[in-house]
Image 1 (cartoon, chains in turn brown, green):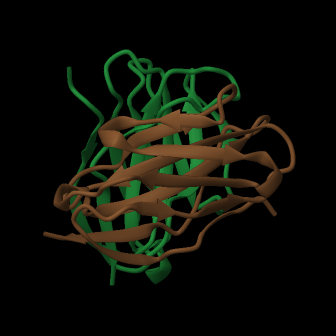
Image 2 (cartoon, helix red, strand yellow):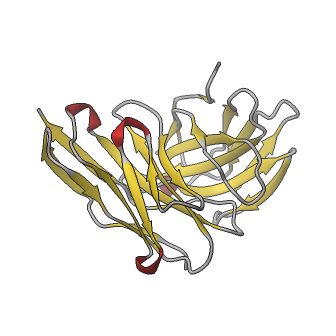
Amino acid sequence: AQSVSQHNHHVILSEAASLELGCNYSYGGTVNLFWYVQYPGQHLQLLLKYFSGDPLVKGIKGFEAEFIKSKFSFNLRKPSVQWSDTAEYFCAANAGNNRKLIWGLGTSLAVNP
Amino acid sequence: DAGVTQSPTHLIKTRGQQVTLRCSPKSGHDTVSWYQQALGQGPQFIFQYYEEEERQRGNFPDRFSGHQFPNYSSELNVNALLLGDSALYLCASSLDRGFNTGELFFGEGSRLTVL
Protein backbone atom coordinates (compact mmCIF):
# COMPACT_ATOMS: atom_id res chain seq x y z
CA ALA A 1 0.00 0.00 0.00
CA GLN A 2 1.13 3.54 -0.67
CA SER A 3 2.36 5.21 2.47
CA VAL A 4 4.30 8.14 3.85
CA SER A 5 6.32 7.80 7.01
CA GLN A 6 7.81 10.49 9.19
CA HIS A 7 10.52 9.32 11.51
CA ASN A 8 10.42 12.00 14.14
CA HIS A 9 7.17 12.37 16.03
CA HIS A 10 8.31 14.94 18.57
CA VAL A 11 11.33 17.20 18.20
CA ILE A 12 12.53 19.77 20.71
CA LEU A 13 15.20 22.27 19.68
CA SER A 14 16.71 25.45 20.95
CA GLU A 15 16.62 28.58 18.83
CA ALA A 16 19.37 28.73 16.19
CA ALA A 17 19.71 24.95 16.10
CA SER A 18 19.54 23.21 12.75
CA LEU A 19 16.51 21.15 11.82
CA GLU A 20 16.06 18.07 9.71
CA LEU A 21 12.79 16.16 9.63
CA GLY A 22 12.73 12.83 7.85
CA CYS A 23 10.09 11.74 5.36
CA ASN A 24 9.98 8.56 3.28
CA TYR A 25 7.36 7.48 0.79
CA SER A 26 6.58 4.14 -0.74
CA TYR A 27 5.64 5.00 -4.35
CA GLY A 28 7.81 3.55 -7.08
CA GLY A 29 6.82 5.79 -9.96
CA THR A 30 6.22 9.46 -10.52
CA VAL A 31 5.44 11.21 -7.28
CA ASN A 32 4.60 14.71 -6.13
CA LEU A 33 5.83 15.60 -2.65
CA PHE A 34 4.76 18.24 -0.17
CA TRP A 35 5.51 19.59 3.26
CA TYR A 36 2.67 21.30 5.08
CA VAL A 37 2.84 23.14 8.38
CA GLN A 38 0.21 23.83 10.99
CA TYR A 39 1.03 26.60 13.45
CA PRO A 40 -0.81 26.53 16.78
CA GLY A 41 -4.43 27.52 16.28
CA GLN A 42 -4.06 27.91 12.52
CA HIS A 43 -4.96 25.90 9.46
CA LEU A 44 -2.64 23.73 7.43
CA GLN A 45 -0.56 25.64 4.92
CA LEU A 46 1.95 24.66 2.28
CA LEU A 47 5.65 25.02 3.12
CA LEU A 48 7.05 23.69 -0.12
CA LYS A 49 6.43 21.20 -2.89
CA TYR A 50 8.31 19.07 -5.39
CA PHE A 51 6.84 18.07 -8.74
CA SER A 52 9.90 17.68 -10.98
CA GLY A 53 13.21 19.31 -11.84
CA ASP A 54 15.74 20.49 -9.29
CA PRO A 55 15.55 18.02 -6.38
CA LEU A 56 16.42 20.76 -3.91
CA VAL A 57 13.34 22.86 -3.37
CA LYS A 58 13.07 26.01 -1.33
CA GLY A 59 9.95 27.03 0.50
CA ILE A 60 8.71 29.79 2.70
CA LYS A 61 10.39 30.99 5.90
CA GLY A 62 13.82 29.59 5.02
CA PHE A 63 12.77 25.95 4.74
CA GLU A 64 14.10 23.64 2.07
CA ALA A 65 13.72 19.98 1.21
CA GLU A 66 15.72 17.56 -0.88
CA PHE A 67 14.15 14.85 -3.02
CA ILE A 68 16.40 11.78 -3.16
CA LYS A 69 14.75 9.32 -5.49
CA SER A 70 17.10 6.44 -4.69
CA LYS A 71 16.21 6.71 -1.02
CA PHE A 72 12.52 7.50 -1.52
CA SER A 73 13.08 10.44 0.79
CA PHE A 74 12.04 14.07 0.99
CA ASN A 75 13.59 15.46 4.15
CA LEU A 76 12.81 18.94 5.39
CA ARG A 77 15.63 21.19 6.57
CA LYS A 78 16.23 24.59 8.06
CA PRO A 79 19.69 25.76 9.07
CA SER A 80 18.58 27.87 12.04
CA VAL A 81 15.16 27.53 13.66
CA GLN A 82 13.25 30.24 15.46
CA TRP A 83 10.71 30.09 18.26
CA SER A 84 8.04 30.95 15.67
CA ASP A 85 8.76 27.67 13.87
CA THR A 86 7.01 25.81 16.68
CA ALA A 87 4.33 23.87 14.82
CA GLU A 88 3.17 20.52 13.49
CA TYR A 89 4.86 19.49 10.23
CA PHE A 90 3.32 17.05 7.78
CA CYS A 91 4.88 15.34 4.80
CA ALA A 92 2.48 14.29 2.04
CA ALA A 93 2.68 12.66 -1.34
CA ASN A 94 0.55 11.75 -4.29
CA ALA A 95 1.39 9.30 -7.01
CA GLY A 96 1.33 10.53 -10.57
CA ASN A 97 -1.99 8.88 -11.36
CA ASN A 98 -3.79 9.53 -8.11
CA ARG A 99 -5.51 12.69 -6.95
CA LYS A 100 -5.47 11.96 -3.24
CA LEU A 101 -2.69 13.01 -0.92
CA ILE A 102 -1.25 10.43 1.42
CA TRP A 103 -0.04 12.00 4.64
CA GLY A 104 2.48 11.10 7.27
CA LEU A 105 1.56 11.15 10.94
CA GLY A 106 3.19 14.52 11.46
CA THR A 107 6.08 15.81 13.54
CA SER A 108 5.51 18.13 16.43
CA LEU A 109 8.35 20.65 16.66
CA ALA A 110 8.87 22.74 19.77
CA VAL A 111 11.53 25.44 19.64
CA ASN A 112 12.65 26.80 22.98
CA PRO A 113 13.65 30.48 23.07
CA ASP B 1 -9.58 37.42 -0.79
CA ALA B 2 -11.44 34.94 1.40
CA GLY B 3 -9.71 31.69 2.06
CA VAL B 4 -11.44 28.39 2.67
CA THR B 5 -14.26 28.68 5.16
CA GLN B 6 -15.88 25.79 6.98
CA SER B 7 -18.91 25.53 9.21
CA PRO B 8 -19.66 24.69 11.88
CA THR B 9 -16.33 24.87 13.69
CA HIS B 10 -17.40 22.54 16.49
CA LEU B 11 -20.33 20.23 16.93
CA ILE B 12 -21.41 17.41 19.16
CA LYS B 13 -23.63 14.56 18.01
CA THR B 14 -24.76 11.24 19.41
CA ARG B 15 -24.31 7.82 17.86
CA GLY B 16 -26.72 7.12 15.03
CA GLN B 17 -27.31 10.75 14.18
CA GLN B 18 -26.47 12.42 10.91
CA VAL B 19 -24.26 15.46 10.34
CA THR B 20 -23.68 17.91 7.50
CA LEU B 21 -20.50 19.93 7.25
CA ARG B 22 -20.10 22.82 4.86
CA CYS B 23 -17.21 24.31 2.95
CA SER B 24 -16.70 27.35 0.77
CA PRO B 25 -13.54 27.12 -1.32
CA LYS B 26 -10.99 29.83 -1.85
CA SER B 27 -12.08 32.31 -4.48
CA GLY B 28 -11.31 31.00 -7.96
CA HIS B 29 -10.87 27.39 -6.90
CA ASP B 30 -13.01 24.72 -8.53
CA THR B 31 -11.98 21.56 -6.72
CA VAL B 32 -12.84 20.57 -3.16
CA SER B 33 -11.36 17.69 -1.21
CA TRP B 34 -12.41 16.45 2.20
CA TYR B 35 -10.08 14.91 4.75
CA GLN B 36 -10.61 13.33 8.15
CA GLN B 37 -7.95 13.92 10.78
CA ALA B 38 -8.13 11.90 13.96
CA LEU B 39 -6.15 12.98 17.01
CA GLY B 40 -2.44 12.32 16.56
CA GLN B 41 -2.87 11.26 12.93
CA GLY B 42 -2.30 12.78 9.55
CA PRO B 43 -5.29 13.69 7.39
CA GLN B 44 -7.02 10.81 5.61
CA PHE B 45 -8.54 11.44 2.18
CA ILE B 46 -12.31 11.02 2.07
CA PHE B 47 -13.17 12.20 -1.44
CA GLN B 48 -12.72 14.95 -3.99
CA TYR B 49 -15.35 16.89 -5.91
CA TYR B 50 -14.97 18.60 -9.25
CA GLU B 51 -17.67 19.86 -11.57
CA GLU B 52 -20.29 18.77 -9.04
CA GLU B 53 -19.22 15.14 -9.19
CA GLU B 54 -17.26 12.90 -6.88
CA ARG B 55 -14.09 12.34 -8.82
CA GLN B 56 -12.14 10.14 -6.44
CA ARG B 57 -12.85 8.45 -3.14
CA GLY B 58 -10.72 7.15 -0.31
CA ASN B 59 -11.37 4.14 1.90
CA PHE B 60 -14.45 5.43 3.64
CA PRO B 61 -17.83 3.69 3.86
CA ASP B 62 -20.93 4.83 2.01
CA ARG B 63 -22.11 6.54 5.21
CA PHE B 64 -19.83 9.34 4.05
CA SER B 65 -21.30 11.24 1.14
CA GLY B 66 -20.88 14.65 -0.33
CA HIS B 67 -22.07 17.21 -2.75
CA GLN B 68 -20.66 20.09 -4.72
CA PHE B 69 -22.80 22.99 -5.80
CA PRO B 70 -22.53 25.11 -8.96
CA ASN B 71 -20.73 27.82 -6.97
CA TYR B 72 -18.10 25.19 -6.06
CA SER B 73 -19.05 25.06 -2.39
CA SER B 74 -19.38 21.61 -0.92
CA GLU B 75 -21.02 19.58 1.80
CA LEU B 76 -19.90 16.47 3.61
CA ASN B 77 -22.64 14.28 5.05
CA VAL B 78 -22.09 11.47 7.50
CA ASN B 79 -24.96 9.16 8.36
CA ALA B 80 -25.38 6.74 11.26
CA LEU B 81 -22.57 8.31 13.23
CA LEU B 82 -20.18 6.08 15.14
CA LEU B 83 -17.91 6.97 18.03
CA GLY B 84 -14.97 6.48 15.68
CA ASP B 85 -16.19 9.28 13.44
CA SER B 86 -15.05 11.78 16.05
CA ALA B 87 -12.35 13.79 14.31
CA LEU B 88 -11.40 17.04 12.70
CA TYR B 89 -12.87 17.26 9.20
CA LEU B 90 -10.83 19.35 6.84
CA CYS B 91 -11.90 20.89 3.59
CA ALA B 92 -9.24 21.73 1.05
CA SER B 93 -9.70 23.63 -2.16
CA SER B 94 -7.50 23.77 -5.22
CA LEU B 95 -7.45 24.53 -8.90
CA ASP B 96 -7.95 21.48 -11.05
CA ARG B 97 -4.75 20.33 -12.64
CA GLY B 98 -5.74 16.83 -13.59
CA PHE B 99 -3.85 14.27 -11.56
CA ASN B 100 -1.49 16.82 -10.08
CA THR B 101 -3.03 17.89 -6.82
CA GLY B 102 -1.15 21.16 -6.80
CA GLU B 103 -1.30 23.27 -3.69
CA LEU B 104 -4.19 22.61 -1.35
CA PHE B 105 -5.65 25.46 0.66
CA PHE B 106 -7.21 24.30 3.90
CA GLY B 107 -9.96 25.60 6.10
CA GLU B 108 -9.79 25.63 9.88
CA GLY B 109 -11.77 22.41 10.02
CA SER B 110 -14.94 21.21 11.71
CA ARG B 111 -14.35 19.40 14.99
CA LEU B 112 -16.95 16.63 15.33
CA THR B 113 -17.45 14.83 18.61
CA VAL B 114 -19.71 11.79 18.67
CA LEU B 115 -20.98 10.72 22.09
